[in-house]
Image 1 (tube, one colour):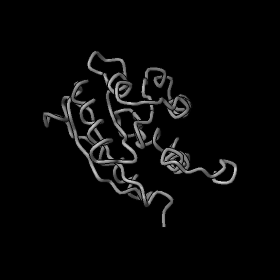
Image 2: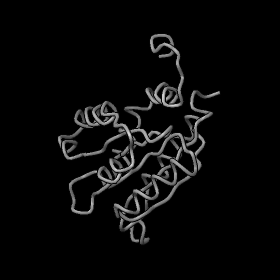
Image 3: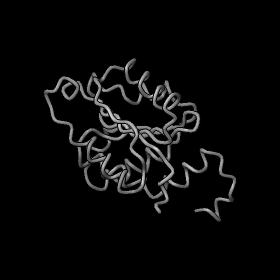
Image 4: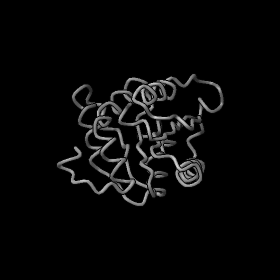
Length: 169
């Protein structure tokens, strides 16, 4: 039994071209596979355009109505004019978890200086953790792998686990 087996997740790809069928999304399916192999139940996935209101609505619906434990987004974390994922996520979350974004950027910076342009954030809405990942397949995988070892503990805490951190880590 995996440490993630009771947790559900969704993978939301933000891509104007991908949503129009002009580009094949490879990051989303890779993230779904990676999460499933870790024991997550992938309960939702979608490719939508980089439109802030649509991102807000989807994140809210997945967290509140579907009750997902984890949502990872891929795409929209750079500095292009249409990159609005962090802004949309900030509108949805109740508490930011800066350490996740910091760990992801630190891991990426060890590989490429271009990681300085990543603006992905993470935070909690209700009992759902939302994490922004870059849009490229390689960077999305590397960023998720950077924080994956910490997720089970964090997700249990978000659900109200009162075990002493020194004992459950």
